[in-house]
Structure formats: structure tokens, C-alpha cells
Length: 432
Image (cartoon, rainbow, N blue to C red; front, top):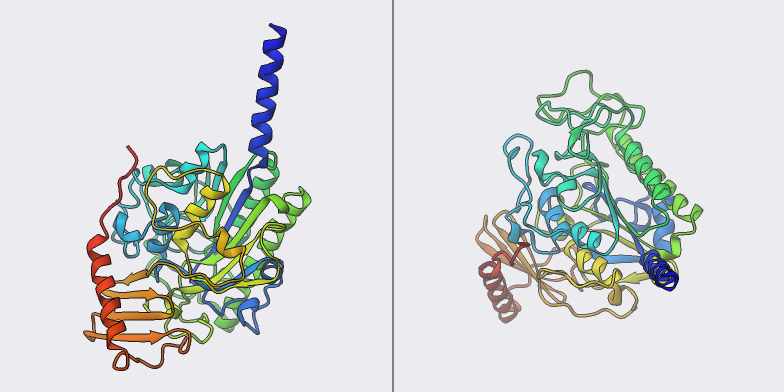
């Protein structure tokens, strides 16, 4: 009996040790932050020392892309590891017209898969792929959720564009005061402190710098919808926009400091990215296009991976990476296999190597426009003009020289790939 009990204790201790050794994941996603939005990507007037430090001690990606050029599609791809077309979320899940819909519960999320591996999961911030309570994050694999489910809210009053109060804890409305960005960061800090002894996956989906353009001490707003009352912000909106990014950076610094305080950095992968290109006030870093557009500026965004001791410090990755790649990467970290077929790939080997690697063709669909990327060639099928555009991104990253007349055979091949992809975009098997 005593021997049996000792064996049980040893097995339990071994299981706990194995769980503790699994790396933590902290994913931070900005909203509408363009490729040129922070210091390490060329911003001169916006000061982001904490993000710059993560890039300096980690991997800065020059070819990181959101799956969509607007919010909801990218998030659907992020959580499912698949092209968003497979779950039918190809456009914005709006506060006005989509309050009864969202990501179906039979879709498998990375949070659900990680929970099976002993991870505690949390999401603080923006959801935007399901308004009804039964489609909130806690029903999609997240143990903890505090945040908003619409596309954007007032940063001080938490009211969405249609006038609904939109701040939730789990799946219930939650009254709270404070500045949206600060609240998200504080909840992350508290979560790390409370779960430092077990593996965790912490997702911070910031509202910043998406409109309304509101600073920490600026409760006014720029007009965004019928729910807004009061006076507009005084001063320069560009200055307030920069402040929004800098406050987010400050909070990220607090999160990193908390990981340091508990000696978790060497066992934690930190990722920073954006859900799409910039809106009117942001910078696409000289790329053509912005939010909602199929050109590079609409979907090429910042991408930083920081894992002390496991990823090369101060390195640069030039291989294309998409949001949907994070799901299989997380599973690889947990030494687990997906239970459903994924479109994304594990990018850890890419990040650990300086060599640029060739990927299978990649696709974007923005409304009726299709883009296909194969190596350095990118073809755009423009539904509005009914004309195709071909760009060599190695020579023409700004997509200013349509060279389709010079390379018709390449354009034909890429168009065939795009047409086949459209036909192939059928749902993969879902969870039973």
C-alpha cells in the first residue's frame, strides 16, 4: 500500500514537472496597426521602446501577414489555423448587421487544443467573431475572458457603434472603469502572477490604435457612429493616435516585466502582430495600400517573435508567415498534434534559421479581389477593373510596376493556382 502511494506521488510529481516544462505563450495583437507603425519598423515619431526591445532580443519578421485586410477574417484564421473562408467569416462581423452570428462552436480553436495539453487559456481584449453569449471566447476554449465582442468601443465608456454596452467578463456584462488599453494590460499582468506555476496561453487583443481616437486622458472622441454624444477631441488627432500606440507599448512593457519577475522569459514565447494594415491615420511603411485593400499595405504587418534562448536574438526573418501559422506553431510547442486539418504551418524552424525558405503558394481574398503569392511573385485578380496585376516583390515591394505583359506565363500559372484555390476552399472536417 505504501509503495503504491509513493508510486502515485512520483507519477503525479512527474506529470506536474512535465506540465511546468511546457512553454508558455503570450500573443499580443494590435488593431489596425500598419507595417510602419512602431519604432523597429521605421516609425520616427512614435516611441515604442518595449516592442523595440522585443525585436532586438528576438526575431523581427519583414514578411509577416494578416490573413485578412480587416479584423474578423484575420481573427477567424488565427483561432482556427485555417483560411477564414473555410468557416465563412470573410468580412467584418459588424455590430449593426451580424449580432446573431459568429465563429461556429464546432470549429476547433487553438485554445481548445492547448487546454487538452494542460494549458490555462485566457483572452483579454477584442473578440469580434461572435456577439451572442454562447459564441463568446469561454465557449471556444478560453478559461478566462474579459473584453469586448464588437469591432471597436469607446475606450472609456465601452459602448459600441450601435450604442450597446460592450464590456464582458466571461459571458456576462461587466461594469468596470478605466482606459481600455490599460485594463487589458493590467489583466494580463494579474493573470501571469496567478498562473505562473502552470503552462498558460495568454492572448491580448488590443483595441489600439483602432478608432475612436482617444487617449488615456482624453475621454472625448472622433465621430464613429450614432451612439456617440459629447464633444470631439481637441488637439491633433495624429498626436493622440501616437499616444494610443505608446500606451499600448507601455502596457506590453509591464507584461514583459511580470514575466521577468517570475523568471518565465526563457520558457515563454512572446508574439506581437497586427490584425491588418492601417486605417487613415496609420502608416503602412511605404507599402501600397491600407486596411481593406489587397495590396501589401493591407495585410503585411509587424511580426515579432521573442523567446529568450530558443530563438536567435536580434535576427530578421524574411520568409512569409501568416496569422493562421500561429495555431500549428503553438501545438508544436506543446508537443501535440492537431485533431483537425490545418492550412497553417509550424514556423518555429523558419524563425530559428537565418535562411529564407520557400513556402507553398499563399492566398488572400479581400471582397471579390484575389491575390496569390508564390515565392516573390504576386498576382492580383482585380474584380473591379477586371484586370490582373503581377508584381515581383523582390524588386518592387511597393507594387508600382505591373509587369504582367513581361511575364504572361507566370501570370497564367498564378491565375490557375488562384482559381483552383477558390474551388478548394471547402470546410475541413470539424470537431464532433
